[in-house]
Length: 320
Image 1 (cartoon, helix red, strand yellow):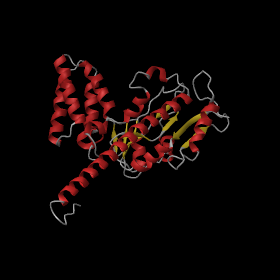
Image 2: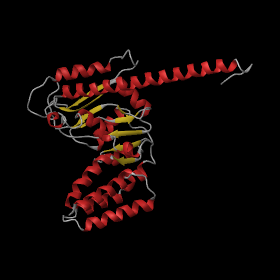
Image 3: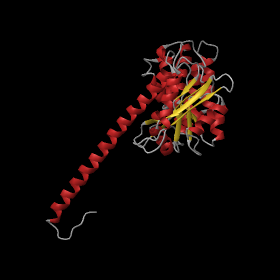
């Protein structure tokens, strides 16, 4: 019997488990099974974590995880105080595509690396893109994956540290430089010069050195944190490529509007909301596939019609 691992209000873990187990059934639409499993304490039955994958998410992982995998985890996504992670990949249309959901008590190397293997996201050579949690550098090393940090988090932290600058002009200048080093692909000298300008601004900051330490972290870890280096590992827009970890979690939070209520969700609510987002993704991508087929059909019809006209003018003409 599964017992609660956190929170005070009651919920039906039986319903949560039975709905999850349905994912293991053969999907007639995609021809494969999804995944669902829970981990419990051997004696108390306390829930220690779980993971799930819709059949479409299994296909997304198998098809696209050889390029890059994006993971952002957060506390307070349910009434459990567990870390919640909805990993994602980039599909052929450039969308951030869902490929699973998991919860663990803490973001520890052993537990998270096991989940990434179960979700088939441990692909050798793929780029591991994360929110910068302490476990991820070692997990990426275990999987022999290049590791970069999601730019959105570093950008937000930089804005907070810049609050110590004295004038609006200095803050504006710092934001411009921060966005330049994080989001633009520069040559190495340009990048170094931008960091130097940021340091000059930090000298005037009336704080305990937090802004300077943020700049130190960005510069010493520039291979993990700047578009100049990170976009060597995989291709898509520099800003989009480095800010995708947050996207799946942001969708769960409805771009932040549901952030406060998330901590009151039951496991079943989190599960249902995630799979609603999977269905929304499926609808969006299906529409794009249909549009691509329509365009190809119309283009083919145009070429064939044009070929027919040209054949009347030149005997033996064949357009290939």
